[in-house]
Structures are given as C-alpha cells and as structure tokens.
Length: 380
Image (cartoon, rainbow, N blue to C red; front, side, top):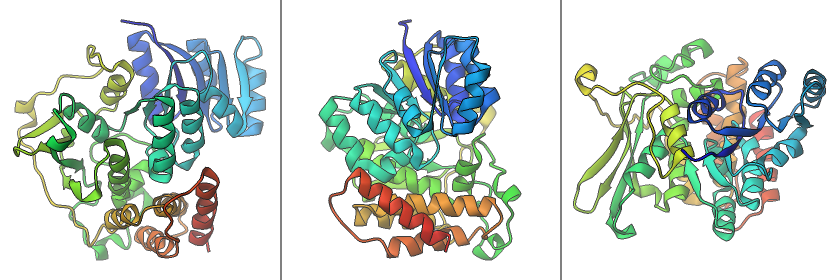
C-alpha cells in the first residue's frame, strides 16, 4: 500500500474523526489538521499523528492550543487563513475537506490552486460555488473525488461507463430522515431532539437536521449536477429507508447499476483516499439475507419542500444555489437554538431564493456577498 500524505480539514467532526480511523488503518501520514475551536480533541489528534501543522479558526482557542503543543514540533495557526495554509501545505498530496458549511469553500479553492487531490465531504463547496470550483479544478488539472456516501456510490457505479451518452439518469437515494411519513401538520411541533434522531446514520447536528428537512437531499442533487455534469432533470430522488443502496445509475439500455454497503461513512472515505485501488473494508460485511428486504418510495415533495427549493435554485443558476445554501445554514442553526420552528426552515429559505437576483457569472466575492445577504434576511 503506497504511503499517502493527508491534510484533514474539520478533523474533530464526525467525518473528520472517521477519516482519521481510515488513516490509522491504511497507515497514511497525516500532515495537517484543522477545526473550529476543539482544543483538547485536536491536541490529542496532533500528538497521535505527529502532524506538522494544525489550525483553529477561533483565535483564542488557537492561542491555548499553541501553549498545549509547545513541547512538540507542531506549528499552530489560526483563523481562516490558517485553515487555508493547511489546505495548501506542500507536505500533503491529498486534502480531505470535512468542514461543515460554506466555510469549506475557500479552503477547497486554496487546495485546488495548490494542485492537491481533493477528497470532498463538504458538499457546500459545490452547492455555493460549483462553477468556480469546477472551473478552477479543470484549469489546475485537479480531480475531485466525492466522499458523501451517495456521490461516492454514483462515482463507483460510473466506473467503466462507455461514454457520456450511455448514462440515462442518476438515482439518488435518501433515508427519509426521522420524519418519513409525517404530515406538515405533524411537523409543526417537532423538537430539535426529535429531529436529531436519525434512523440509520451517525452524523453531526447540522447535517442531521438537514436530513430531517430533506434539504440534505436537495443540496446533494445540486452537488451531483456539478460532479457528474448532468442536468437536474436527469436525477431521480428515491427514499430508501434501509440506507443499504447508497445510490444507483441507469444506462440507456435500462440497466441499473447500484452500490450497496452498510451505512458507515468510512467506506466512501476510504474509497476516496485509496482510489483507484480497493483495500480491506474498515467496517463489517453486508449480508443481504440478514437485511431481509429493501424498500423504496417517492419523496413527499409537498411536505418536505426543501428538495424542490433546491431544484428551483439550480435551474435558476448563478448565485441562487449559494443563497439557498446560506439561508439554510442560518435557519438550521436558528432551529437548533430554538428560535424558529421546524417548518420555518423551508419557508425562510424559499423567501431568500425569491429575492436572489439571477446572474450567469459570479466571483468568490459575489458568493460571500450573497452569503451575507441570505443570513441577514433569515435572521430578520
């Protein structure tokens, strides 16, 4: 197994910690780590992997970490610039971006500019800046490998595809979250605790709430448009409660190729880091006979409005997807803080979309400006 040098952005989150599990198993060298403010956790990670550089976004936390790591050779950085330095570090050949939210966009662009291999778990990078990111990746000859379980599944199913014309559609699966089958009336009074009870996956709070609103699936649809160069209408969303079929593709001869596996993020993480090779799984073997059955349903678009909001945003194009993403981040946070109700999330995101101007071309600064507008509108 060839040695790889990895930089992990967002190492103290759910995906980041599972990525470190994969690095332990594969014997990969971890050169840089970043987080927002988790001093104790990132200190332990830095010591275990003997990393060269760490960065914390929060300045005070970075000062504390610097004192704690004073007996090591690890360099401690701070702020967004520090995260970007870790993303572009010369010592790493692969950057795994597991930052949650819009904060992942600038480090991704930095890593692409440094011509790093990108293992992308930060879907907001492509949702908010898809045209920018894919344009820079093409210019720099950088390949972006998906870490999201659904996009990893699609990527795997597309291996060996004879031509672009052979693909008929992408089948994007969704667990349906904790509120599958509920009516809008029933969702009016759900609590944060209710929404955080995902039936299959262990994820961070923000993504778990996105799964409950099914905004996560809308964002993944947008991400798939950019990753696989398809039109939104070429993507079918199917609710699959067991989370065993992670996604599928249908070819012109109506053959459907699917990728199956246990619901554990270490499988797609490892594939992104080891591609094009495959190694022994870090998780258990799938037994279909023990699973017993697989079920599939059409999403309830009327109750879970976020999916169609995202479809409308990608069809309108320009900054609309960035606006929807930022509005959702803010509304999601406000719901978790108890400031708004569950159904208010979709309503506020829809209002922001309606007020976002349509434009074909945009810059990074434009994305940041619409991000500010969307968040401020949601907080009004």
